[in-house]
Length: 431
Ligand code: AMP
Ligand code: GLY
Image (cartoon, rainbow, N blue to C red; front, side, top):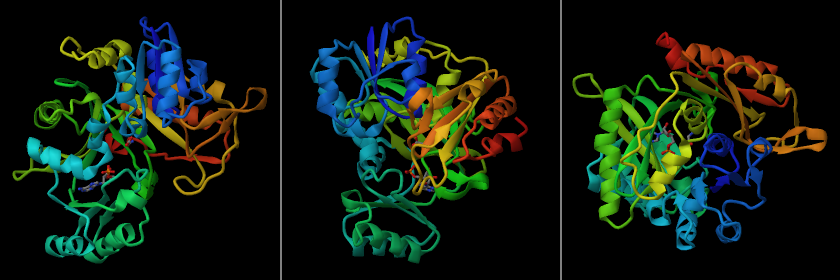
């Protein structure tokens, strides 16, 4: 098959790395890709958001299967366009991608489907939003309805912070149209994790869980980022909790979306808060849905996955995952993100990254590129905020961590930084 992966980040490098290993893949393209992806796929210089240009390329090159990485092209309707052109596609329609694209849509939908989640209100009026905050008290969470590049969520410790967050979005228009409507919801206190399931429109099969580290600096300090490191499996997601997530969240959502004429085809990424239930037992609650693989969760999932990724995703695109049972290597995986100094604020592009080849030789290590471009004489240059995902697999999380940091220490990049405490919760549990 000729396969096209859409996207340019670490998630897409990991996807390409897994797709390239499949016996079903004869030729792999990635649009637009990056310097690391170029080692496993032919990069095509088209942005994923150019949905007409992507569809034209796929048609002109007789692509047999498209896998869409990021949420933006999905929200813009890329999967609809590709399917209308007769090209099997892994990724939801624009209507189903609203589960991520509109938090208000998501909250109303999961309320109808009976999914356990934080209590909430939806607001387009500033005074009504303020009145809700005054009634609920703090801590409370203010979220923009639309996509705001991961910056639209404010955890407010007191009501004044919440009033300020409301004004910033609705009066200051800091997030543009994305903040014209707000979701304000109950603060959930617990341990956060990510869970993934592959959906075929009417049914779903569990993939696996992972734990991300969203703050920029060690000890979960500093600003929120897209994710500074992950590991999988996530100990907080016990088999019982994962079964509960499938039964009470994923399956009701997939069935509900189908019943409402918006079948979800793709990977459903449930952001979970595991809270303490009334008698102290852990209970999963849904924080949010994303309609794509997590980044950098995808890197650890692909490192662990033993079965054929293409077979699995194609089964979903063709409408039947019932015969699929993902198999895993008997290993844990861990990913350390290396980011450009300054990220998630302003950062420099074009700095030179050295010694990647030697770092990639550390046993069990794969280096997934997130934001790189090729430079002169085979050099690799930084070209984004998150730049590399140094990923290792080993029998235990502690060993994978040791291998990943050994590789990180070999990389010669003075203008970059990483967290040194990825998987601290697992280390605290002696894993
Ligand atoms: P989201 O973009 O919805 O994932 O929110 C970003 C982050 O804010 C999440 O990863 C959580 O850490 C946090 N968050 C979102 N909603 C809540 C909530 N209701 N209670 C506590 N933390 C939350
Ligand atoms: N790493 C979190 C996300 O992809 O949204």
